[in-house]
Image 1 (cartoon, one colour):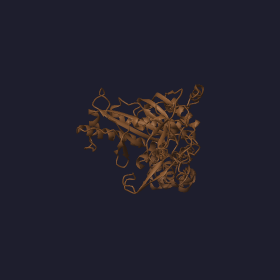
Image 2 (cartoon, one colour; image 1 turned 90 degrees about the vertical axis):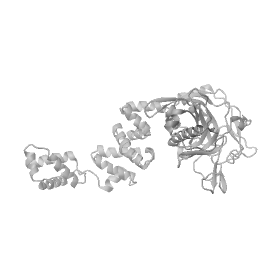
Image 3 (spheres, one colour; image 1 turned 135 degrees about the horizontal axis):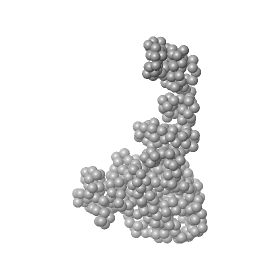
Image 4 (cartoon, one colour; image 1 turned 45 degrees about the vertical axis):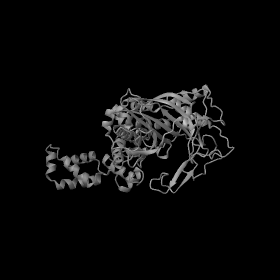
Length: 502
């Protein structure tokens, strides 16, 4: 058994010789007001151990009660993923000891999930789609949070002591488990990323979670295995735990493919284990040997009755589902008049909601796309961030375009206003005033600048009078320079011709 990793195999070489199979378990924290089995408040950022009850803490005699809203949210997810909803399902005890699980078991669902046998089509960057089959979506509760103090890595190894916060213990979760994803080939990392992004967008559309990955609302466990050919039995899988960004999901798959190929090339054996993802190094490291289901000693939760969703209730939930992201994108593309390639770029940049909100604020679809996919996309790339994380809002972009449409600034000046907004100088109107960028609309200053330009180039007037309009551009350029770009070039041209004719 090999536990160390030889030098990585290049990704292209690895996928040329091995068939990649992956699966993803996505956990989403539900946005309910209270926890899964008790009345403790669900809120982000509270003081440690202030959002707990005897049930959260697993105290003797404390009995759980199922959160009905969490059940509804789980059904919404199942329906949106084309799953069958169970006529009856039940909770089970998943037994294991960790200090962040005070009961020494997690209340989850095992052999009777609330939703099963579904699928979702994910759109890839080139516009093609890939179908990912869903094995199950089941309800469970989250664990608390361990903080390991001391040491160099922030992990338990080498720590001096550990602190436990039970505020998160008992928060409702739905875990969505794929079937083994086969046939993606070299595009497996891209498919994995697109799948998690599709689910995140779906959660937000359904209104069941804020789905903020940076807060841990959505976490992905990424399983990867290699086999010698698509006809060979599945290889031994590893599970990289708690990956919490789209980019990291893609990188984790790529790394594990290269690492496992290196192990297999050396004649070693891939260990079935959990692994940790290191964002800073872009690699995984060994965690613990992965347990199989029987190791958890599942048995039915004796303190909870089965959940039996009324079929009429399920159908009412289905009828109330909002327009799902893929259908919404197709509708918006038609309304906006974007070409397929333009819409793909918008989707891949994560700009659909940003452009939609900008258009709702009064900008045209063309103008909204110009700003988000032009100046702002370049800024985001330069800063190494996502568009949505830039310090500017769709309302501010709509207001900026409104200034252009009103003729108060041109595109060049608008870029300076945009720069000020991004720098935190205020809304577009405030930046416009503070920087003195408004177009000069008074003919007096423009005529003075024109006269100065003509005086500096005395032969220009004669050429223009003789029918040669080429030198008009030189005069306009001089006026624009004198007014720091704040003149209306069209009005300047009119005044130059009037001045020369007069």
